[in-house]
Image 1 (cartoon, helix red, strand yellow):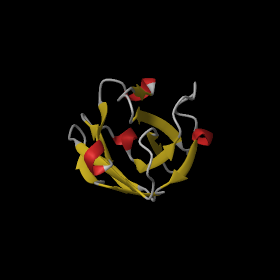
Image 2 (spheres, one colour):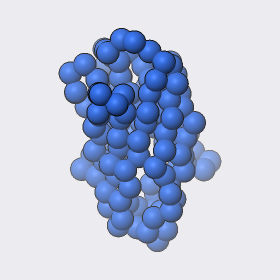
Image 3 (spheres, one colour):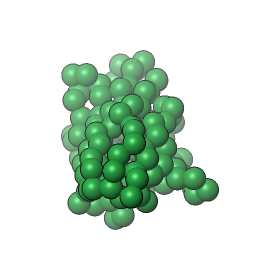
Length: 124
């Protein structure tokens, strides 16, 4: 499984970004893609995930209302729309691939494959 995250950049506070995660190298259609972020000096944290087979989504409380995850299954691509960006959203954002069904869908250990991150920097 290969994952490529892209779409990051430098944005002013209040702006928006749409991150993309292109997945390849697998044949089954029941999996989960999670988005995580790691700010300088902080641990990596899960922000959202989507189960491809049924489209169910999950968000961390800290991003509810501003982050929207979606997928284009025909393209094996998952998107993370981030609105009303805040300086504290500055981080490297990673996408990861895992099997669905976990009761802790944003736990890092539930994901088997990780892509390289994409940097998001929000200026105040």
